[in-house]
Length: 133
Image 1 (cartoon, one colour):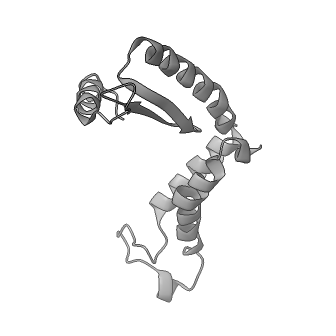
Image 2: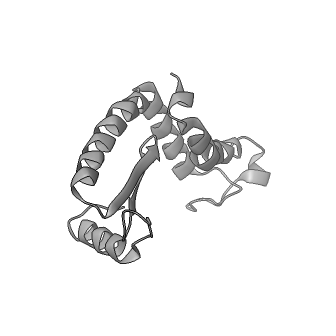
């Protein structure tokens, strides 16, 4: 698996995988030091079932090669967004790394001044139809 192509490893390692596995590392230790009271959900410094479940889910995703699908989905999404860009002059640029894709909304195609009002309408309409951006 070549994550460097997608620049996914940096994001994934920095913001998800390492903190979760750090949490997993806290599970090993002396019970009287790390142990949580019976019935408690634990905390940052004790065995954490939520961190275990998140870690297992991450490992399963990696083993099932879902990451390899990122390239295909990214290519398709950028293709569609660039087609929309050709029709709408309010879109200045479409770019991204992996599936972290951004669409730049502009007021003037020549000056490329940002258009926060257009952005807000698009985000609101997407949210109302169930798409979170």
